[in-house]
Length: 201
Image 1 (spheres, rainbow, N blue to C red):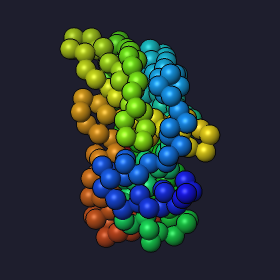
Image 2 (tube, rainbow, N blue to C red):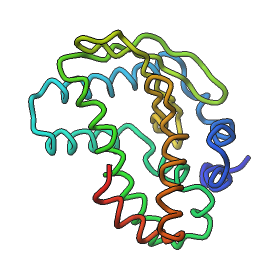
Image 3 (cartoon, rainbow, N blue to C red):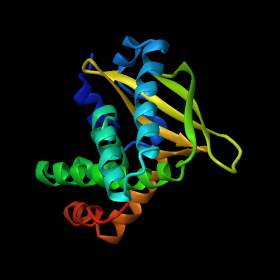
Image 4 (cartoon, rainbow, N blue to C red):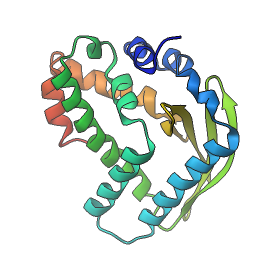
């Protein structure tokens, strides 16, 4: 049976939909209760941050901490990078993943800041392909509630989320398009992309 690292390497360069189908088989070590419990933890901390009244920069630091603790940031980053990840040097790839971590935290942190005065409510979990989907609903002031779904797997004994779908917008697919366009503008230079991601998001 292929290792987690082998599966991850095989997924680099695949379309997001194909990559999802090739996720680690260890996802099935989870059950619906455990997947929901993870998202309950994440949502509880996100709700606490958006209700904290902290400054934007302080909130971004908190959102980055949440991403690092509960998300498979490396998987998300490498999936977003696509085929270029196969030929990247280890140092360039590590720098890119680190920069992507801050970038994605700021980008989605800004989206979560829109929830100030509202809340996210976790509803249910269900198995989907080789992972679990946990459905939640965002309740914002002056807006109709909308869905916020989380994709969760277990890898190397850790329960992590690897995708968020907000109002039908798939994070993995969206970032693959966004990062691909940014990399094209930099003529495939991953080092330059990593440097620019430190200021993006």
